[in-house]
Image 1 (tube, helix red, strand yellow):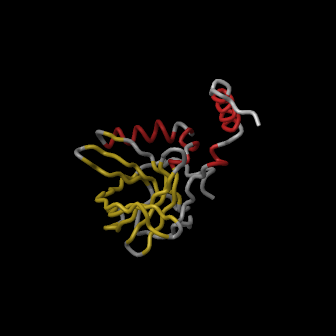
Image 2 (cartoon, helix red, strand yellow):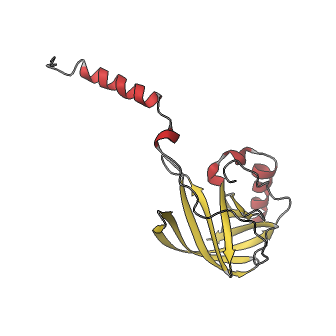
Image 3 (tube, helix red, strand yellow):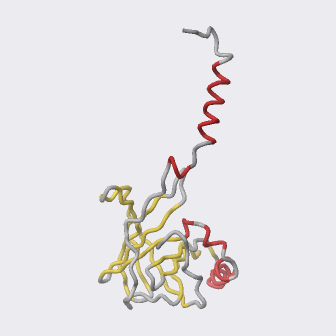
Length: 185
């Protein structure tokens, strides 16, 4: 057996070995994005309007744009805005006049309503994978809902549960961005 008295040879060999392993590895082979736990189903109800988008307000700012579609898909448009007009302009520029938004898995999710409750689940950016969180609450009327909690589902159990207090308001908007994407079937 050969033993090395110093690390002058071992350090470069270990570095080369690590580089070789990393070059043959792909993120998708090592880590996998969370699966959505809510199944996509057609939304046939009328408890929520789907001919526009929903937004939250905080300290005179508008944020968290969400589009809900009859096919059960949710588009998270994000952003922080100072006015309704700024939100409309953003949707037109980034989602109507461009198709780039379709490339990002974190823009997509699914939703469901049961009685006056609402749940939606989408992917959120994190490293090295995308985590899926559910946001749940209750519907006040066809243009307003309140989110009261968020959590992840792991092995059929709620984890990372947080209380929320977000009120979303509806804005009629047409045309809405297309809901076609490659992440939700």
